Length: 263
Image 1 (cartoon, rainbow, N blue to C red):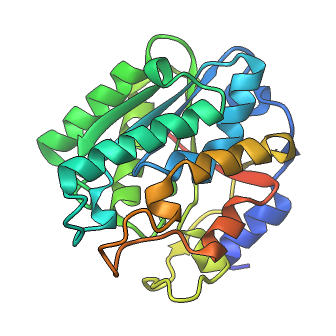
Image 2 (image 1 turned 60 degrees about the vertical axis):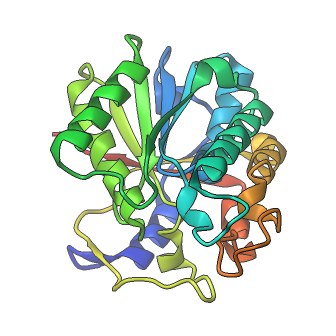
């Protein structure tokens, strides 16, 4: 291969060649926990549901911080205006992480940035980084956030927040990226628009986590996001619903975690 790889090919190589592990210490160290940053309510379950369920079963610290309010999914709904939809999506996320074995009152937080407006710079960005650092706490933690090449502005901005936060955490902190919509570069989703395929300049690093034992809990967690998986909101014909092809990618028996360089 050349020094710069097309994103789809790069992801397929990662999914075939990166080590497959069943143990959490490979990702979290001997005593560390996981902090998952989700650009929207549901990304935590789609990308890291197996990891979170494994942490809960093993008694590992696992927390989820949702960056945006998720109200962009049904912008034309009159029955579900932004404030009501934001509240619904918070409730769904609480139900989702409860199904993964976590405590929403202890393990879940929300930053509440407007959907499609997660900041990549400026005072809002600095505030987001500060809040991530507060939520991370004092113990050892590995950060997990969406891949910087995911084709959604909030996913890319959340990665930038995660990278800045990870660089401010103690030495030895690790940052892993989980692709959600970026998987469409490797496995096209009918009707899902993609930008020009980015070039990735370095070979993939990271791990694949075997989640066969956690897969049913992950399915239940994703299903808790009824506004994204069902016809619950029926007055916005153009509203978003997770396509079956995207769900099939999420429900494979492995989760991909790409390790990012911090320096």
